[in-house]
Amino acid sequence: MEDIIKKIKEGLGKKIKNWEEKNPRRIYITIDKEDIREVARFIFEDCRARFIILTGIDTPHGFENLYHFDLDSMGIVVTVKTLIPKSAPEIDSIATIIPGANFIEREVCELLGVKFAGHPDPRPLLLPDDWPEGVYPLRTDIATDGTPKNK
Amino acid sequence: MKTVIPIGPYHPLQEEPEFFSLTLDGETVVDLDVRLGYNHRGIEKLAETKTWDQDTFLIERICGICSTSHPIAYCNAVEDCAGIEIPERAKYIRSIIGELERLHSHLLWLGLAGHFLGYNTLFMWAWKWREPILDLFEQITGNRNHYAMLKIGGARRDIDNEHIPAIRKCLNDLVGPLEMVTKAALDDPVLHARLKGVGVLKKEDAIKYCVVGPTARASGVAIDVRKDEPHAAYGIVKWNVITQEEGDVFAKAVVRLLEMFESVKIIQQCVDGLEKTKGAPFCAEVENIPPGEGIGHYEAPRGETFHYVRSDGTNRPVRHKIRAPTYVNLPSFKASCIGQTISDVAITLASIDPCYCCTERVAIVDRGTGRKEHISQEKLIHLSQEKTKKLGLNPDRIGRKIERWIAR
Image (cartoon, each protein chain N blue to C red):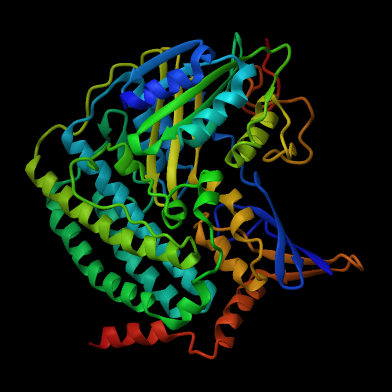
């Protein structure tokens, strides 16, 4: 446990903008969005963590992308947090490094409207073919029926 | 000449429509594409409009087969967020329900796999052995599916200690058939011929595609949330993680068969725990959920179910992310199906137990002429069953073994 924390802290160095150990099994690391490819590669390849999934959240400050990794043998979930500005919702894709992230990046792209630069296969995944363009159902200004909420 | 075969998206028997497009060269699969979303119900969005307690019921309805796996993962997430420790009796209750569910889910898969290979007697018997488990569920929870036994802080209802003899009897009655069918399957030449070396998912591919559950464990990746992050009663009782190295469909079958014995072991020890904790509280008092975030996961029959919740201190989550195991297991078909023949595809697609793919109709498009031909699901399964027959062996050897065992 101590070893892996030391390894991650040393490996990522100044890329870590905030480090939070909520409890011994949950670590949250905040990084700049420009560093995501390098950080994801380090945790997936060098630390041999398994990529669980990506959570995209619409917050008042911007879109938060949370990349969840599991260090299975230690039972620790490492979550890498990035904040993406609403004015330019785009982040580098990690699907070329982790093939297991291919589907979820397509999903976040069509449900939340965050683009993934360099994604090998950026087709829609879940929504029907006649879904209106530019309507992102997981955003907070969209109601559960897919129409804009009344302000 | 290359042929494109679309499989799906709908099948009346399956709960999860998916669409596969197979590109064939002759009989060999050279490419594969998957399309999802035909049954996307927007549950993540819906969960934000319901209260923390209502969400337990909503989450249970994600899946009918692993209907308690999602609530366990969700409750783990909320308890992680609020820092709640659940009472010991609740731990036993959660593990009993979770493992009974694994038993009936693996038996369901075993039956389906038998059917796809032309072992229809196995299909009939596996589902017959599954019935008493569902009856037991009805007895102890009131429902055959959707047990509503989970609550943030513990269990919603107690398991009455009067039901313990029924649980023990159900397990004892199940072990005999399980041992017989495991032995019968493991030394069956037809199953060896049809499943060994078929749909191999190599260990490095399993890691690359981040697969989970029996799909990963059959490829030598020893991950199991119950062991890696002990919660419920999994840290209290003794049991083993089952792994195989080969990564083929046979290995996946072996993992599921042997896992059922571990489930029986877990439930037996948890029932002992119920006897020890008679009358003890089974749910912690939960006043409210503080602002923050929580992560919970659970080893569902098909692999890790993952839930993330974020709270702003109100009575409902601001974000609830759900990831079911099939979501990460499906893309691994790119590694396991390519190079297979079309008659092995049905069982390879079934091997991850994907709340199974929906081979309701198959259309063969001849690329040269653009001619389309629609084949039914029966035809695809028929192709698979015919291949078993062509091996020159009686496709119902297991059936005869079961009959002999019954007559004993």
